Image: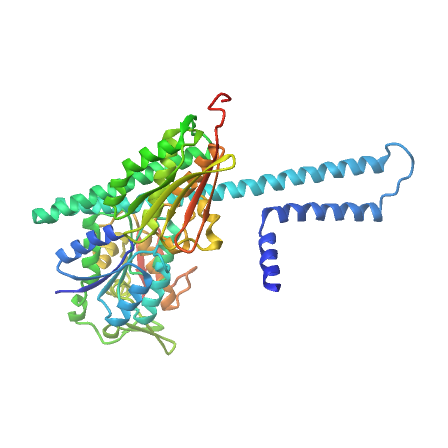
Length: 228
Length: 304
């Protein structure tokens, strides 16, 4: 199905190459070279996915990311940047990005991640209960909402998929490798911080103590465990 | 008025000198209090009091040296860190483009024209990568003062004439117009390769920061004992607050964030300095004019 991608990238040559590839994948691409253009494009017609560079001439990509997520937490955002430092990656992912890829990247990897992020709906058709009790929290998969102490938080696509996967395999140990393949949809590579950071995000959302988690536990060297 | 004072105060308190002086003053106060409260000269000659004083002076000196050393180290490591992060960013972006285009050609079914476009784009980005690497190497050599300048007697007017004739077409191919202004025959001591680099960087800088169709005018005139070379453009100009900073390592003008490497003008400034000259930028009503002043070699190189 044709999807609309907003590409925010200030390097014209790179943007041209990316646009060509996204179009060959059968998507429609809108290119914004500055933060201002990106804001205009987002306000005019929200896309299905945002590919975002961090170093933009007018605003920081992280700032833009927060704005996007404040508007619609479920709009998937892939950060594509030359900032390869660990703290940048952690910053991007904890501000709500769904994925983080550093330049120079592999074309195959980028396309796989993109497909993974655009592949929604598979779990919509699955027979899921309207509400899942997670002990203290209630998850409404259809609305992608998590209810805790009477307050409702919307989950991003990736957060929801991760939580659903852990719930399906509740009380079993799920490896990081499996999560990367199943939730992010790409081959497990050397970079594993993504999963850790998302687990941290889920713990915060579930109200679990990050120092001594009881619901969502880490088993060193094995993986993660959702206790229910 | 008050605003100016606040600005001045903020600049001072964030400066390195402020802290050095502050630490010294604090030690001085401690010493003074100690003398007033406890130490009294009891007997003539080098008594306990004088030794104590000398000892304290030694400590103060030591602390001073340590503070200066650490402040210096911190500044140095910040420069190195900035250097690494800037360089890795400047190299990664064109590298990503080259890789993307080559992979696209290799893995996609493309029409011959599109494939050709991709390869051309990859080549163009490789050129950018090359320039970046070249710039980084030159800047790093200049930073470590390892670049050797081989100055010879040179007629700057004739050199400029030749250079501009060669460069004209290249500038035209990038959408600019190179104009030759008044050129005087002026003798200087200079390294022709480095002079070409200075001009290359100034011209590229004008091309990179102005709209297509920019007019770049190069002229040379005598001012007292100096040869004054001017590279002027009719672009957007540089705001007054940034005119000095543009020559700093990795500084990019606010209007140009994301463009350029922040190396070009630093290289130019260092090279000009290595020739015993000065560089500054003036912004008349339109555009900016980079002024390079080199000492005239009036003895014709008899005193090397």
